[in-house]
Image 1 (cartoon, rainbow, N blue to C red):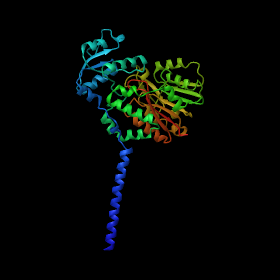
Image 2 (image 1 turned 90 degrees about the horizontal axis):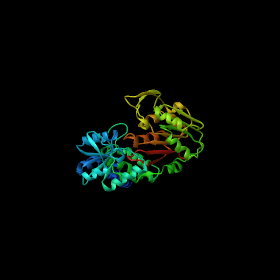
Image 3 (image 1 turned 180 degrees about the vertical axis):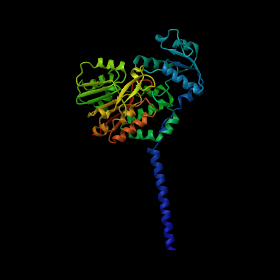
Image 4 (image 1 turned 135 degrees about the horizontal axis):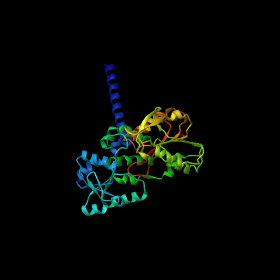
Length: 387
């Protein structure tokens, strides 16, 4: 009888401890464990535009407008008109719409929602977008540069644990604030999140990357040398060596011209991948040179095949960042270079890329910033060594 009573009391104690443990976990979760989806307060842009009922007017033309028009159509949202900046209006049409001036749109409708269909980081263009946004709500839908699908609440919920992982591992409160702003922006298309998140690029180089005169730099997606100019500005023109890859032929010629006279620089008209191969790149992509079903064959190599102790690697390679990381595992593990990785080409870049980097080197400090751009291009992760 005594033995049964003892066993009963032990079981009772275990149950009580278990209940207390569960309550403790619930308290911890309520303090520290908010899910990412619970931090996103915005509706999907497409759902909002459909429910709002105001005329939808597109600002801009080209490939971006085509993608956005197709997505609006999927949601049953009609486009009422299209306008462009005054200097681009010349009596022509786009997708069956005569392209108007903003003034003409305002004369035609009392109120309307503006959907932005192009990208820019120019001050005068952004100032004009701000001005229009004060008069009529401007939305800038996020459509992926590479890959498919939409970045919406359902996407965030599906990958909630991944977003939480990144958020929890960001190094400073500014990174966390901007990370949340960019996710809220991508869901809602609301400009306020972007306009409040612009970071000073010079401060990123000085306060986070802290480049020195002894950097061995690898620039992947060098374009015309614009980021090399940023590097040189940050190091006052001093460095150990620079290796720059650019697959697009026209951009490569500009790169050669703009880096004439620099010492210890190697320029390669090649792309980067997870293996050495020949891939097809678009002939008309320019800055956004990317893989395509049509175009020219371009040699691609891996970071590891360069066999150099790089101290700093920048990746802006139009959705191929994950493949580049896979082809640079040995270099990153061994030399632990500072990393500057663009995270806006594919929807999954906001969590897949940092997960991969921290898998290769768990000691990295991870920062997130968005430099001046509408839409959320130039949203980048920065990784530095634990010192």
